[in-house]
Image 1 (spheres, rainbow, N blue to C red):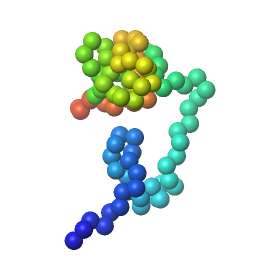
Image 2 (image 1 turned 90 degrees about the vertical axis):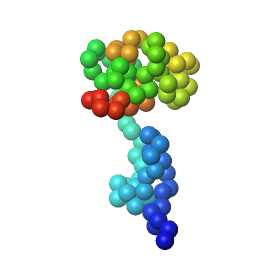
Image 3 (image 1 turned 30 degrees about the vertical axis):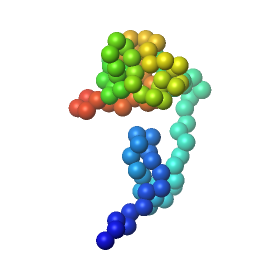
Length: 96
């Protein structure tokens, strides 16, 4: 018997999103940011930062293709513990 769940979209993290759940939530909403927001920003040390991101690569680099496209390279512009981007995802077991 086939699975009756239908998936119509993917979440930002690449996971399928069930249409029924989207309908309950009122569809997909665009995020709203303050006017000073940038997709990648320097942050205070110790906050949510690239240092705990699953995409952190060697030598202060990022492996996320969307960040690389935005930034023009995989090199973080600041130390990993002083920078964060909209594409941050915590490492397994990390507390964000």
